[in-house]
Length: 335
Image (cartoon, rainbow, N blue to C red):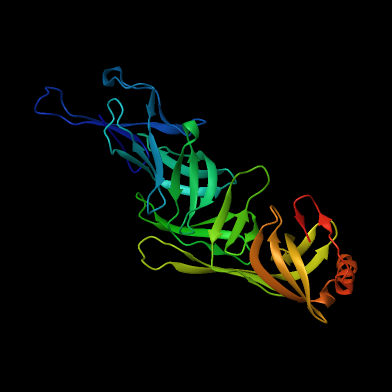
């Protein structure tokens, strides 16, 4: 028995005839819909009534692995168990309608024998990651701690609000029309390494994009990272730049802070640890450290002493006078 999916997302059961068998060829499109369980296993629920002569169960459970094809359609490759044939692929026609912190949603439209169109949603659970080529990917959570990987082969962008945006074009197999789809990822930027910049999602999720980059540029009013993103069908990756414009200051009980604003006027802070050194009458050199583990991130920043007003003034006065001074902020790092 082979399994297929028609352009209307109906499961087709196909039992080819054989010269060694007297059974006639059996090929039938079954009205129903796909469902997912908590481990993202795929099931096809058959709509009643079903002819008793067809010997078709009301529920067909399928074993296999998830992937994404070049047209951003959801694929399920069947494992070689029981009557299933190794390599059978079920390709679901539809569109990605949302990218959540721990999920991805696909809208699937089906048509019954009475030409009734129905759209329903399949929600896969898992985590978002960036792969070694800085492409976006969704890791579908399966049993025993394993994951199936959906790789997005296009190049993402950063919009005016500093959000990651991914666009792709798809074609409808039934109407032959083409559409452009846009996925927006709500998150915020963070830096813990000179050669890596992270895009984090909300609290309570393991999803994050960690992009490998060239050395970050740290200036008095901006931080800039450049990276390459691999795309399908091209030997050359595309370049992407993340530029954050803002200001530096010292914040009591927090550390060295770079503050910047998104296009919607929301303010965001990136916190660093640092070693300070007076390099001239009006200049301070900062050797930046990770705020998580006090690790030197390999970036040096030179700033005017005039910008360190408020909380930073007493510390800088002590530094200029030559007195030994160690100030601890939080529990993880020193400046």
